[in-house]
Image (cartoon, rainbow, N blue to C red; front, side):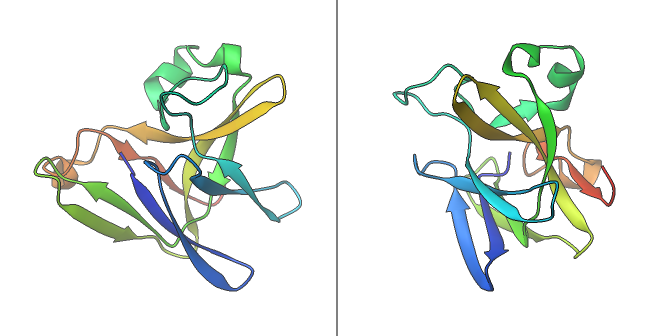
Length: 139
């Protein structure tokens, strides 16, 4: 389900892991800048947005996120991490023209980004039953 990422900002490589309550993801703004946005919401964190770090594409299409005023965003990362069913980490590099699709959600002044997930391709089904939606330009 994409539990970690490596991304580049201001010429430096950074990493972010969802279990960290301060985890942020880079979001590409309309003017081409990177904005760091809080990655989802965890138990015991204040807020009104869903307590998760991921949004299933089928639930987005079904309208289950409409109350969060969802906006599709690009999450440009160098690589992402999935843990398999045995808890082993596997890293996957993205090409320069690829990004992870995100959902930017808002409730009042609260703003968080969620990784959009889809069922994995057959070759990756042994890793996890949900996979980040990786797209190439444009969305």
